Amino acid sequence: MARQTERFYEAIRKSHRVISWVDVIAPDQEVVRLPAIDGQVDVDRTAAVRRKISCQCIDPMGLLTPRGEGEILTPYGTELRAYRGVRYSDDPDDYEVSSLGIFRLSRSSITDNNAGSPSIQLEGFDRARSISRDKFKVPYVIASGSDAMTALKDIAKQTFADVEFDAISSSVTTTAPLLFEAGGDPWEAMHKLAVSMGCEVYFDVDGRLAVLPPHDISALPSPDFTYDAEGQGNTMLDLSREYNDEGVYNGIIVTGEALGDQLPPVRGEAWDENPASPTYRYGPYGEVPAFITDNLAKTADQCAVIAQSQLALILGAASRLNITGIVNPSYECGDIVRVRRGKAKVDGLYVIDAFSVPLRANTQALSLREQRPGQ
Image 1 (cartoon, helix red, strand yellow):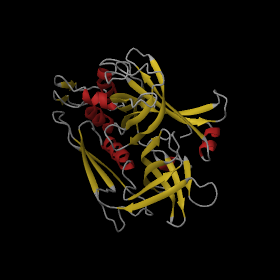
Image 2: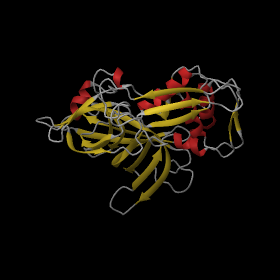
Image 3: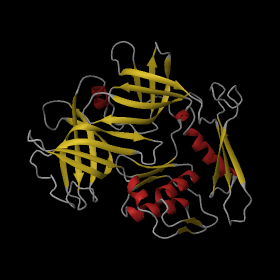
């Protein structure tokens, strides 16, 4: 994690002064800053659109309150960038904030009750929603022999020509043409290409398109943050724990098979091989696999890479933890936290699957999935 200074992380663990705002960015790149008085950003790794915002701002001078369509606070290309952080002192320059994401404005409403500045309610989603709404107008074909990463980037550039990327290098190519029907969802097509490369695809807090493998907890030496409900310095208010095997798999079996490529099907697998895990494939839980057919995998090794990346996203799902704690605005899905609560017999490492960041309040909700050393 470590996206902020150590001073920042020390400050949020105790009482501090919250600072937050929303930058409104017009299609012509004019930027206007609005104070945020309420609202939150929600982040969910399992959602098609990872980030969304709903916030209440004020327009102190009344200069931005729209008179009609096409103005900066109407949903016709305007973007929002939200921030939350810490004001360290009365010095106006002595503060530090964390970016919460870039969002395309989808809805705005203005309320004026004659009690002061107009109140402006804004809602928006990250750029994935814009790509999803920009449907293929005609059948879209990715030619045989195309580089999968290049194909994914080309689709994204149809909606955002100047999009920036945070992506791995990949050698995955197509062995037969891929056809997406007119009216199809380009974001779904990008997701399929990312899975074939063993990656997730999402927009990060800076609006870059990330195409990266899931985090590997076994490669992380320590948690990014610790929630402790014991003694002084309590950083957690409450927790709820659930055990549920519905839809919980401990293995992924991938078959690589593309129509028209004249190649025999190939297969790769990944399993929970940790004997200490309650979903260990040879333990009482048994083998509970999910099956995936991938059109780009041409070798058993490629299938195994896909299987391992998908397994990393689901292991530990049978043991979920929801907690409410102090606000850390710098998280990203996949970050690792430690949670300790003696009375509830909780002391372990957890992967963040979803979380909220309130713009003003002082507590934060997180949805966690348990991971175990050596998994």
